[in-house]
Amino acid sequence: MCGRYVSTRSAEDLVQLFQVTDWRAEETLAPNWNVAPTNDVWAVLERTARGHDDAAPEGRQLRPLRWGLVPSWAKDVKVGARMINAGGAVHEKPAYRRAFAKRRCLLPADGFYEWQQLKDQDTGKARKQPYFIHPENDQVMALAGLYEYWRDPAVKQEDDPSAWLMTCTIITTEATDAAGHVHPRMPLALTPEHYDAWLDPHHQDPDELRALLIQPADGHLDARPVSTAVNNVRNNGPQLLEDTAP
Image 1 (cartoon, rainbow, N blue to C red):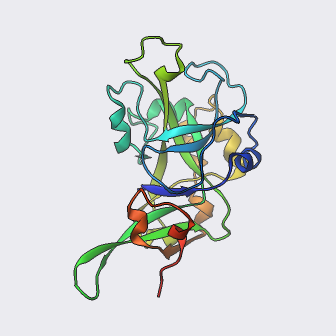
Image 2: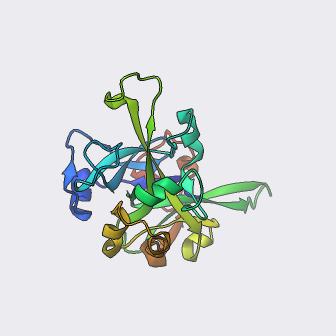
C-alpha cells in the first residue's frame, strides 16, 4: 500500500509542471514531508468550476482534496480513512468504478514511504524499518488517483460549499524494483504524454485507461532507510528524508 508520502512542491511549481489553467490562489497547502491519510493534498483534475455535477470540464485545475476516498453513497465520512488506496480491478469495484470512469486525477509527490519487516539483530524482535522511495532523478511523480464528491447530510442547503467534500485515493499495484524489496505494493503513476488522456472525463474505455498506468519513474526508483520519526504523523520536515544507513 501507499500509506504516507511526500509532497513539497509549491502550487506555483505544480501549475507550471502540470499545465494547470484554473488555480485559486487562496487555496494553499504547506510543504508536507509526512502526508498522512485524511490530510489535504494537491490534486490535478479536469472538471467544471462547480465540480459536483456532470457538466463538461472547464480546464485543468489544481485543488486541495482530502486523502481517503469517501464514496457518494457513504453514510459517514470516516470510511475515507480506510480507502486511501485503490488496488486490483478498480474499474469494477463498486467503491471506485464511477470515479474510474469519470473522476480521475493526478496526485503530485516527491516520493513515498514504505515499511520493511526486519528482525532486530540485538534483541531478535521484529521491527519495521521505514524507507523513502523516490525517482532516481528526483523528478515529481504524478501518482494515479481517483476522486469523489460526498454530500454532507448535516448541511441542509445543497448550494452551500460546505455541503460538499472532495476526497481522493491512490491507485496501487504489485511493487517491483527498489520498492519491491521493501513492500509488496506500490502506487501507480503516469508520464506527461498521458496526462491529457487520463484526466479527460470523457475518455472512459477501461482497458485504454489502465494501459496508461506505469510504475513511478518507470521503475527507476531509489530506496533509502530513514528515521522511525516518520512513524508519528506529528513529525514533519526535511529531516525525515535523511539517510540512516550505517
